[in-house]
Length: 340
Ligand code: TRP
Image (cartoon, rainbow, N blue to C red; front, side):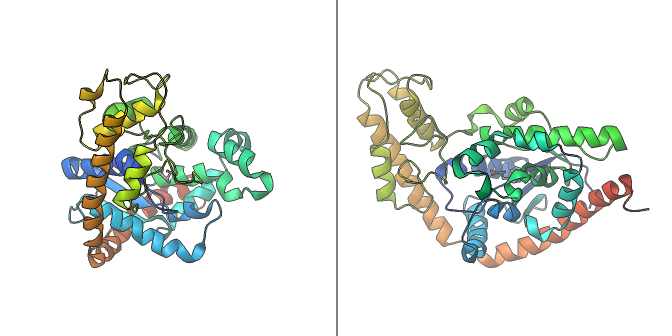
């Protein structure tokens, strides 16, 4: 495969139900890129299945969860038939694991121990319930990125440190062994490239200082793609706001209202008409209306997805990506003395 086009890559985990934060913040911008820019760029959208059990999961559900993710990509409009769009499962490309080991040996313990996500989890769960897999998760993520020469990787706030690490380790090995890797663009450039309106930070409706997250236990502030439209409406109407009594976009003082304004915009509504209003009810109604419409439409698309076309795409992409990844891996193996 010729590799001359710049690569845009991202992975979407298949652990739990995806929610509108993932959809609007991560998936949709990638699908839009694929629709508008594939041809000029190569688009790699993959399921990081090896990342799925860095924390405890129900393994009997993993296959179904992976397929569900792929169906969601398709329902979101990912053009499976485009020759510059690649859809694959990480574990079907062994080079990810192999490069991870090599990168591990050039990664400092301290470097990994300083990762915020790792530190937070350790505090939440206690060191005995944290796996080594969670500890070196960013190294696997770096391998995911570097194997394909990725330049653009859309990342949410919680992943910026991991992207920085991918840049660091790429630079470190290049310096020591010659040009092995494309160094992905720095976070600021990533944001410029993807545009800041891509909504990388939809917040939890109940706790709007936090990102909307599938690991949030109650799920009351999270709109899942599988929620019934009625449940979604209830969640929006019950969203946490403030008592300041004026709608303004201001995350410091009014995180709940600001989040609702952003969600409205991402769902295709017009937030501007609510700015300055004293009542929060109509804004919530508008968001609830858009969310309901969105879910009805999306769920009917999801039900209509043809799994055969997904299977075919996976087979083709995994074959091609195995070639691309193995070629890069071989370069690294040679550089570190594992191959003549
Ligand atoms: N770590 C990402 C997340 O939890 C998923 C991921 C894995 C990823 N490998 C990646 C994202 C490579 C971008 C690039 O959301």
